[in-house]
Each structure stands twice: as structure tokens, then as C-alpha cells.
Length: 294
DNA sequence: CACTTGACCTGTCCGC
DNA sequence: TGCGGACAGGTCAAGT
Image (cartoon, rainbow, N blue to C red; front, top):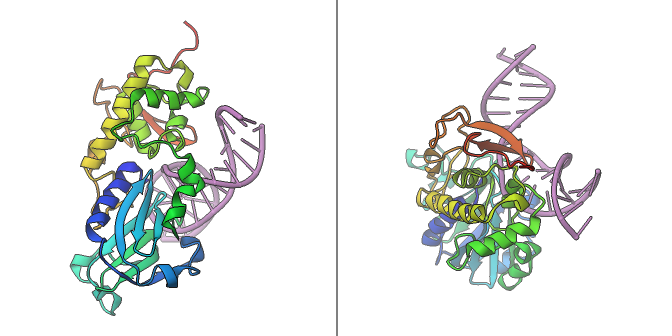
């Protein structure tokens, strides 16, 4: 569920909280949570300090003074929660202020810092991961070589967007929006929201989109992503930011998880269907399927 | 090659 | 109340 706005929100929080802190210890539950540990951990993670926290697509990068970086993917249920208090490592009951920010059975990786603070990587469904790699090698990973441009970048134009969508002209538009090699960072929530905004039915083939629709979708996508960042992301159930706070974008969602409710634009009842293997929400009046004839 | 579907996991919800 | 099954969705491997 963490998509671009949620990962961006986590990044902003961690960039404020982590730089300058020095790693003193790391724990992880399972090698799959930290695939290349412990080979490089003692040499390049312990005693290294955090230089910067950045984001590319849905991936977080924690750059270390050792010339290595932690690469983190939250997938659907991942959380990265910072806690400045070391008290939870002792016995006894958690204090009220720590509720929701404590390690639990979903905690996969714990980083401890020399000042007593810690960072928990929690992931209920275990799809996420943390890796430790030389910073210089990150851009050589297949994912980073293939991933598309950042949709909110100042130099990303609607013409570039159109041209990249057209690389998959025979696919439905929803599947293409979800394709990370076309545009980075879009997941199920913002695909549905942006298609509603542009009044495009999700099964419309890219080749059937008129020029005005490319521009409308470009604008709609950037608007919903920016609005969600402004609201701290979407919290359906597990997502929280670096300090354990939920985001409020779902309050502003127009169709996502609003089946049975009235379309904010025309009042027609929003429906839920299945497109590209995903639950898909749309207004059947505003978003008409493209007719292949006529 | 272009495109679609299934696997990876666990918690939750729904019907019986 | 318990239990089976569907569902949630990001990404990659496997299938068509």
C-alpha cells in the first residue's frame, strides 16, 4: 500500500530524524528480511552514521558514512518507525506515549543507534526487505536502471508521460499506470484516483486515448500525488509515517474504497470491479468504457 | 516480444 | 463459536 506519497512522507520524517545518528547494533528476524546480512553488516553498518535519507520510486535509501546505503522497500504492509526512547528494550509495560511505536511480532529489522534511539522495520506480510549495498552500486541494480521517471519532477512533461504510456499501447491504462518502468511510484490507490480525475475508464486501451486524455491524466495524477503528500499519505490499515502517525488522504479520496457511495462529481453510485488483477474503483457515469466502434 | 497471471505472506472479514 | 476461503496489493517469475 505504501505508494509514492506514503514513501515520500516516511522519507521526509526520516531525513529530519536520522542524519548524524550512528548505528550501534542491528537485529533481524529472518535472512529474507535482510538478504545480504550479515556479510557486510559488521564492517559497513555498525559504527556507520546516517548521511542522508532519499527516495526513488517506492524505494527508500539511507545513505551511510561507510559509502554503503540501506535500501528499503515497504511493499504493502511495511513500516519504518523511529523511536527516540530506549526504554522499550527493558522489561515491563510500555508507556502510553510509545503505544503503536513499539517492536512487535511484525518487526523484521531493528536498527539501534548509539544515542539510545532506534528504527523499526515492521512488515506484517513479509514482502518488504532491507538491503545493504555500496552506494555506488545502487544505480546499477536492475530496478533502478528500468524504473520510469518521477511523476512529480519539475522537468517531467505531459508529452513525456504520453510517450511512455504509448510504449504499452495495447494494454489497458490501469495496468500501464501500475507499471513502474513507465512511471515511478503509482500504485492501486492513485491509479484509481487519477483515472477518476481524468474521467477515463480503467480498461481503456492506451491506443484509444485521445490527446486531451493524456494531458488530463497527467494533470490528475500529479494533483492526486501532491495532495496525498500534503495530507501525509493514505492510511488504509497498516501505513504509518516515521513517527507512527497515520495519513489523512483517504478522507479526500473520491473513489478508492468508496464503492456504494455517491460520486462527488455526479452522484452516481461508485462501483468496485477487477482490472489488471486488482480491485478497481470507478464511477460508471463519469468513466465510460471506450467503444471500439462508432 | 508484448502482455497477463500467479506466487510470495499474514491478517481480516464474510458466509456457513 | 469455529473454519474455509476470498481478499488485500508491489514486484518479479512464469505462462500464454
